[in-house]
Length: 502
Figure 1 (cartoon, rainbow, N blue to C red):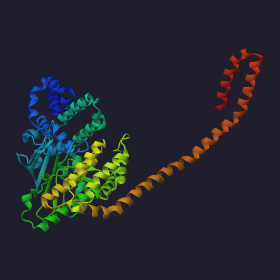
Figure 2: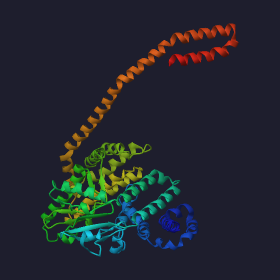
Figure 3: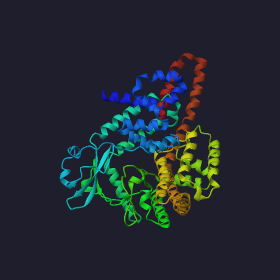
């Protein structure tokens, strides 16, 4: 019964979120009549459409808030005004009592000297508490809510049902909505396994040993599992404009460039990046290092995708529509029905808008939104990890402006791309060379068997030439002298041939 009630609520909110579209196709009277079963949710119409969606997701709570946050990364599907509204979605739910949580994890309480009852962070999937170990170390304890998996699966199931019901709408198919829902399901369920987050934290921590500006808290492995994660407590200050008032403009500029350099290196050199970079997940330490926390969403790029994104970025920076569209094609983002000539022309027009400006005057975040609005018009749907990456880079500029308001990303990014170009290109050439060598090696290993098989086949065909000649002659003689015997002759030929070819 609760499943049906939840489905009714989702349908009600969804109906009024799309009310303008319904009015367009059914007339205002038809839309009003159809809304009667969902009147309890009519208050949504008091908000403008973008805020309507945000409020609906907040009211639904649970996995839908998380889905809204993930949707805020899909500028290739939603208009920018919707994305900006969804970016303000906060996953804040009333905390579950600590004692109630610990009942589901026997023995966890005894492992700590003290655990604060009030969480320092509380979301729909997990909440985080400050704690103290037996040896006096301060740590952060992240605990998955006991019913989180059950609720996520329920909400995703309802969402899949709705998508299948709406599959007759062309946009649902063109923007591959069922595949995107599956991606959301994978990401949401992935957040429930904290060993994955711990493993990525360890990877970033190893990287921080060669990147002196980055700090990643240490994982306490003996007190971590699939459902809880214990990490070193970060003693720093969250990023805010007020935090940097005491710094000189030169120091602020240097800190902003240092932060961007960290993100660029994780993307283009490590191939792994923090997928949820916002001021709440970044701390400035007393020694000037930046600390990253909350690795629940991490982007992972395959070497080939990383190469294509590099070429895409170079194409954008160098006003080269061939390079931009070619990269999109190779990652499968351009559908078969897309007119490539028109797409290249549109990309060129778009790049012309920015190309003649000084790099210092280009707003990377605005460029990002406009760039993906072009993609949306041509129904170019990017892989989820690539959209997350592009948004991460755009947000990098926004965060850098909190540190230094005059900061612009392109003057820093372009020389960096130029510097790492030889390494990226040589790595791609090596991978392709190895792949080609392996394919040719496989071909050579199969060549003797193929040649032998072909020779046998040709020999068999040659040996049957006299047989077919004699058969045709016999057929002609019987046809002329005694046609009745053909009923015996033809089956006999068939049996003889089968025995001869064995």
